[in-house]
Length: 370
Image (cartoon, rainbow, N blue to C red; front, side):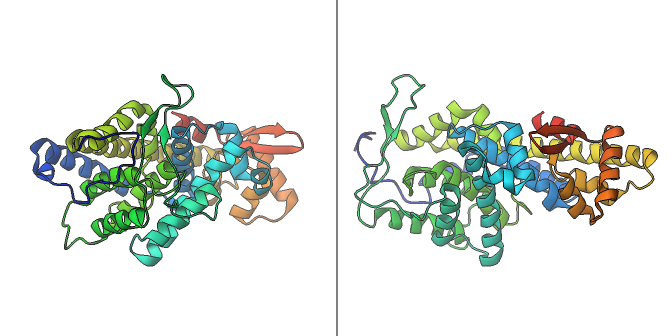
């Protein structure tokens, strides 16, 4: 039966896909290079002195890029200010709050996966709810959900895809998807290939009324963590997708319309390989800059040490009290002297925003924006 984008796609083939795509020579060659790049990037992450501090910053970049794919935009300045201060976070604009919720959903998912050691439907719903700040769940069968072209696109408002709809159908498709991901004895496919297949399937099922793209991209990272390919959810996949956004949606569409898996798989493996190389480069640049700043700081300031150096690289924008908490200096006089010294030496630069003062690590900002 011919595919009709105006009708619910209720006959989505179950996983695993039919055919010999897993044994295709070109796919296998790309799988080797993507796996190697991912392993190298993961080893580089483990070189960080305190991975959670810096990984949190990288997760923020992923969150910003992932929400931008959904045409939700915020500035670096607004985002970094909100992260540096819970009061500022509460008063942030709607787009910034969306980005911050994505980051929190990523870390909540990471916590759940480490606890459960398996990806289940409850975990996915929990991640979705965190992203959308909602108590909703799987979209109900009567919901006339469609995916349309954006208002800025040619033929704005045109339906480009209608996801499956029907009593119990989404739940049935999700059971198949999760069985495929979790049962390695029944489905002994390479984890990277599984991730590629499952990402298409999740987006095609479109289990929620909104937020499926962001939920699916978090699911990618959590699956790689669950399979031991990532120690933490640090792969910055969304930047690659933004740069190659047209190819992303085109290749998704060809699987739906023609069952053309190969180009989709090659696209996703290329995304993993390129993102792994980018992540490794980013972390190496941060490590190199941390070392240079540590040596410079120690040469200029008697009190400067590794602990303080790691604290000022914990995020791009910092408040004085945040640094005080990180380095366990409660005296206002001592902390004030420290901040004055850090500004005089050029390690940090102050930026006033009304009554608030933020201290910017311009070297870290430069690396993250590169």
